[in-house]
Amino acid sequence: MSHKTLFTSHIATLLFMGLLVMLPSCSGEGNKFRIQGTITGAVGKTLFLEHQGLTAIEPIDSVVLDERGKYKMGGAAPEYPEFYRLRLEKQVIPFSVDSIETITINSDAQSFATGYTVEGSIPAEKIKHVWLAQLDANVAMSQLVQKYDAGKISYVDFASHRDSILQSYKDVAQEVIFEDPKSPVAYFALFQQIDGNLIFNIYDKKDSRIFAAVANVYDTFYPESERRDHLYNLALRSIAVVRQQEKAAREIAKVDSLSSPEVHRIGYFDISLPNIDGKEVRLSEVAKDHMTLLSFTTMDTDWSVAYQSQISSLYQTYTGRGLRIYQVSFDGDSYVWKNRVAQQPWHNVRDADGVYSSLIGLYNIGSLPALFLINAQGDIVARASSFDELRSLIDKQL
Image 1 (spheres, rainbow, N blue to C red):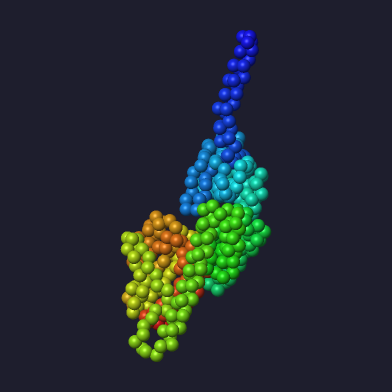
Image 2 (image 1 turned 60 degrees about the horizontal axis):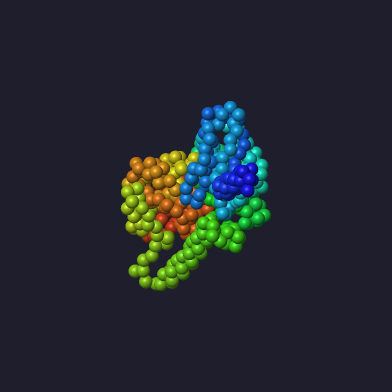
């Protein structure tokens, strides 16, 4: 064999070896999704790419934007549809990724979360439609709360307008859900919140069917997905709550049929949750032989400050006459909750399940806040629609 042939053979071997070395790297790049685009007016600001998991938001990548505003980021392609977001300071743009794909998102710093455009992903474009509908509903709700807090509208008008706002979003969401229940858009639309309230209530008979529709297709198409497990667990919880409601109704009917005056019952679902110190506080112990205000709320909303001010006023007016207050917060963030209730003298507990709490179903809570008045005999005598109504009811009872 000539030196030329040996040299050629050697070069070919080196090239082949180099190709083998490069293949894993190429394969690794191939298993990633890419997000790219331009964000104008954000010189020196950091753009973050984050994964929106079921229980936490996880950082994936980030880039400091220059004068051109161009960015290019990515992450490992998920096995099943997953949700991500771009974040610029406090503004976010949500989107989904379900394969190895390249999505282009362009926007500007001022209207980052509302004025963006999407290319390369139909689900991401549809999520934008749902996202903007949800933002519009939240803005409308915030304005409505301000009017009510300022005394410009009655509670009846407030409730009517609130229901209309929620229904406007629900109409948009239901359209995309039934169009394709297995799409990540359906899952996204199902779990959006307006002013701290889930729009679709898993404990509502009609809404539970919508959950079931999405759960069934996730069980079929994404059986190993953790989001399938999430939907399945919610469905089981819904069934358990319905059974508990039916059992309680039977027990109450049975007790009511007994003639003995010695038979004692409570006409509400008992609650036992931890207070700020981690100690379990039971509603039945607080309410025993006392008129009790049962409040369901959340601290991290526009209306919470005004609402807590009203609760404080009730406490100052009626606690000397025997009224007790048991307040359940559905805050996911324990830090926010603890800071807000630390100086409150009434009973505050937190349900870590948040808006997925079974109490939502047991007490048929369609929206927060919700107020129930329990008399000294252990019966719910009213579900108050306003604080004026509540004061009138307390005055009659005490």
